[in-house]
Image 1 (cartoon, rainbow, N blue to C red):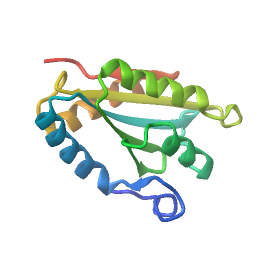
Image 2 (cartoon, rainbow, N blue to C red; image 1 turned 90 degrees about the vertical axis):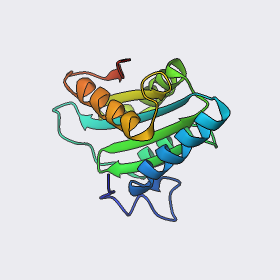
Image 3 (cartoon, rainbow, N blue to C red; image 1 turned 60 degrees about the vertical axis):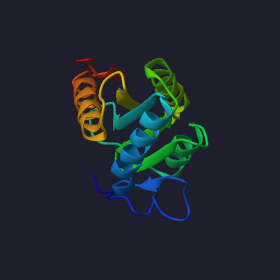
Image 4 (cartoon, rainbow, N blue to C red; image 1 turned 180 degrees about the horizontal axis):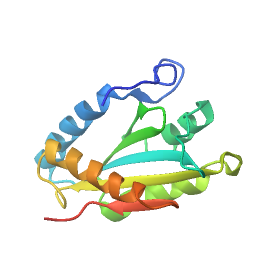
Length: 155
């Protein structure tokens, strides 16, 4: 997924560009497999209450970059989507991170936050399948009219 918001994914913000997201997932899955640790991948989509995409601004970028731990990766995927890769994090920890982010969103934005969560090894054994699972979970979350966190389905 290529980033369309290069102004937020540059030297001035800790968010990485979207094209790094797939690379981060692949490298983190290999490390998780090697060290027998869980890994969570999250895709978040922001929209206004009327359903239109919410463009990420500097305040949102900082929130998403600073909420996860230092070892985690935050990438801007498009104007309204952010991806997170959380090391050594099982499913419940990933849901907790999304909920913290949802609660920290400024009320003035009237923002809806939908998220897809997929974890290695619970939902997929390789990076490509994990990315497919998180995409499917996000699409299920997007079907709802309110904030929603959907976790990938186990095979």
